[in-house]
Image (cartoon, rainbow, N blue to C red):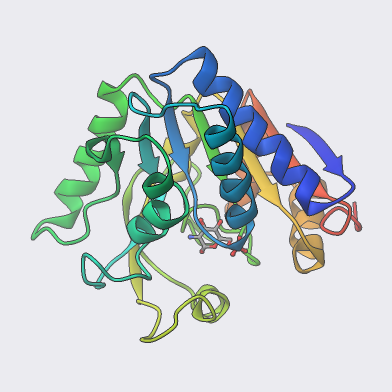
Length: 240
Ligand code: GLP
């Protein structure tokens, strides 16, 4: 795993946005695996700005969300699907039929989760997987204890994750469960960018960088990826 430390969150976000832009320019039918959360806000803002300036089209891009909450209404503004449409796809030339989100409203969610794996595979796999890091080291919603070869499945959220994500909910509580790509699914991606910015992430980044690969800190799994970069700003990198 390569580590890149930028002077500011803005510079780190620009680097990540550039990586996505370059990929889509080279491969207009790229498959993107995408995350949500505060860290992604700045990245997506820059990506949209640059894409609009350069008139870059995403019509042939396929987008796979890393996770989705269970129990929210389809059009709930707190769903990750709504997040992705709001921050990215409503603002770009993108074909909404190419947005794939784990199906959480089907009767058989386990079957839908395994179909999500098939959809990723049948598209040729994820070219670029973008990830944030939870304060407890989760990636997607693979909470501590998740097996390093896990696949897309239903998971229970920890109280720390629900607390941390609560501020993003204008009304209603954070669901108790979600469907997330597994760590194994994430490790299958061809290129992976894991991003953490701000001082609140310094402690977990220290554990990821200095600790062994272990399921107690799911993000350590990225060290097993053959083509991954951990993208940090000075604040998140201050303990390494
Ligand atoms: C959420 C998301 C993750 C994200 C993490 C970090 O739980 N499901 O995909 O990486 O939180 O979020 P933030 O960037 O807001 O700290």
